[in-house]
Image (tube, rainbow over all chains, first blue to last red):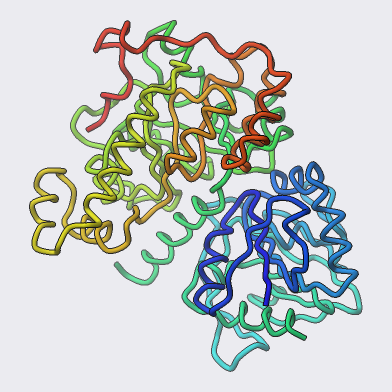
Length: 188
Length: 296
């Protein structure tokens, strides 16, 4: 299985290590030409404003939309979820629009409000460890978006078709449940 | 450590992880911060004067005015860092109350304590500290630093010290990774670093926190150089807003940081740039004028 990790800025190495633990080689993507024949791609955490500029400058925004249209699975964590959203607030910024949600950036506050929590999910019986870092919040969701995990009454992981997004960072834990779920999605 | 302490530590290092592959730019007002964000900075560092001006004007360099920092925090959506004097834990308390995202306990400001650094475990906000070698880096991490930046020589526009410190750090890490467990106590003794952190480095071949580079980066090729030597992101201080073309230069350094292994991309980033800041020959500086020797 050929899985990419967007490597323009952010914690792409942490995602790479999680994939390696699952026996999948991470294909680091910096240009549109790196995306050839990917079955799935992970958009990591980091700064969404910085990452978005690269997506546009390198034509990666178009390549990602084409990939999604062709059945490629996409998983965005935190900043990656922001890139996927249809609408971004606080402040408003452009995004790929591949996921029918409205996301509010830095929804919990600033870094001192970052935290590690445990929450139920539909992926496994055991609670998931969720690392929130300057995390965004899903404010609104379209009818085709299903919620896979919630924390304190707010959705924190959602899916629409082959697009998966979490506002927390499963790549910063030892638990690979979410990545396994994504690989299954990419393999179907 | 209790679970809560452990979780606080993880989100501190977690934010440092998020900044990897990015450029953190020194800014002195909201307008510069906006330019930095537009140019692709992954964070900004708020300070009163950039190091080149501190060097030129002298006097006591302190934490920036809270009004200026607040202005910067409301102007941009990316993380805002700010500097405190070495050992000045009360300045750090003020910055934490202000809710800055990261504190730099920095040799660029005039030290407040010539023996002690801030005990950074007491804070919920993460800290970055400068280091010139492995011992210094591990002492800062033991005190609670969630990110290390090699010091270089701030405000010099000269990359030579940044290279010296990155090479020293990487060489020490590589050497220790080859040693047997029976040799590590001696390393703890000679480097002045806690044994358990020396053991971590020996086992993992890297620091337990991200390692960035600072102090003298002025061009896209400078950024590509320190990243190829092992830095995971770069801080650019005077290099941007002391150049003739801040916005273009900021964008160029951001581009070179992502594509640091791709000379063609660094070439593209280097074209159409104006004049870089005028640099200093470190050898012409008096020992007393060096900023890197502050802290221990």
